Image (cartoon, rainbow, N blue to C red; front, side, top):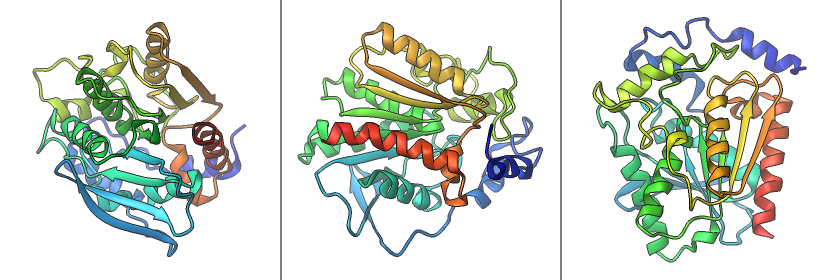
Length: 294
């Protein structure tokens, strides 16, 4: 059974948070209060440019400096939340995984539609390799829509013959913008129609939303690094992650899936609110990443 605190948070989410009729400007306004929190005094943060893309570069003052980097693709439904709104989530990764974290400020739709964000992700990854960061020292983390962006960028890197990172970690990632056969869930943050509309913001009206370039659960996934996927029972996008996992397994990719009972989309970000399930999920991710680093 879900903790009292997360049940209280779920009840507090406005009923129209994922209004299917909302346009991208409304989405930005709705999401803003949930982001932009200040980071702790022990977090060192700078802005650096990799591959022509501005990136946040973060680490704790006393972090485990073993050369590993978390390359983090943030959420925001493809249309909202610039870098400044996600400093707090980079801090979560730094703190929970004890790792230096780099977060690309990828371009947002609809002003910069597909493939702008994917190109930015690929450019950052390619630049890190060119600057001497070993691929096996990079752990790619994708949260919400950032999960699909990360996989799309890795598929492009694979097709270019680039070395793959140590692993990919998905935090309730989106991997299917079509959401065509998913039942309505008990998730307060997402509805299938709302996700489809964000997909249209991202690609316009001509490109099918189940195109594997934007919905990688339909892509050829051979050659990807090991995948560690966490989904919530009530997360609207959980079926897309399970489909990705099944397809990746058939392609010979190592896959671990954790399904968390009673959890919703994005519950990991509620760790700062004292949600015990968020803390437990991050501990599980940390155990996985520590095995890569030992």
